[in-house]
Image (cartoon, rainbow, N blue to C red; front, side, top):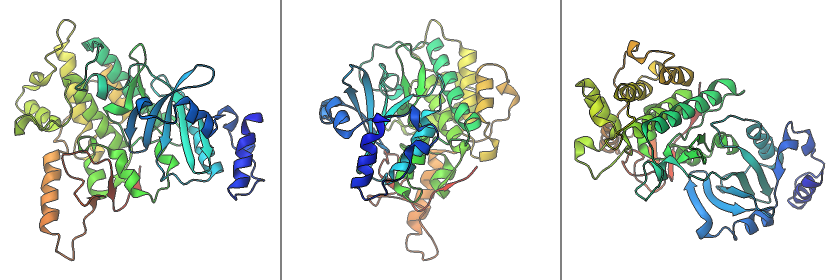
Length: 383
């Protein structure tokens, strides 16, 4: 019980009841509790030189513990106001989830207003910085490597959606949340973090969406989130991995700027192979790459109920299910959302019109730029 001693002291100091029995929380005995001082020392006082990432839920730092272990330290956004028992209860649930394609939670800090998570550090960073990033990377993403990454992410997400109880909707599937270990095994990060934040903190819910290119239409328009919203985001990610392109690139000619729209247009004209990453050479299987692109289009269909489950996605990627037997309908396109933006702007003075999606800075969420500080009118978790 020594590792909980400081927790009891902090509860007493913060005015909460000191007789709360944290040991009654199922699974909490498996969670390592760190002090704030310990993590501050490990990260060099959370120095910018140790900062390795930032997202809607907070900032991530590389740290070195007293025993020499290298860890990733995620400082959650200040909007996380849960009490100690509630926070640790959610942490216990997340820490008990184990899968080859999910990042492992090592421990946490819950001291005063600080809410910090400690993960194992992964050597090869994220897909956003290696495969899609503009910086230099020594990693060679040949076709077989990309296949393993796609299938691994699909299996990890299927596990969260269908095997974990209660089911977990990630809400932030994107390239920067797919981390790679030394063997380039993909690990989904940030799963379950939405459960650590109050449901009424709607602007944090929107931060989960990240870049507009990953955002499912029903999330953007109605604020409704379910497992099929994750499927849509995975579909976009799948297209990115096969093409080696970010979902939005405003430096390209306009008709090529939006990856999903470009892929759909090529598919309609029977030319989908033209968008496969041209850097893929020796081990490229063109038929398999086209199959993956078709699965990506299936996942991003505008009609939510037509999108496959993640377990079926995994089956299609591994040839257990034939994607060619599936009818692919039009995806939810960024251009359609932009048209909605225009309509909303035209109706801005209409008292009967309510803007559903606006940013914290007064600009629409339906911008092609990043919207990491946006806010929604409401967010509904549905399934």
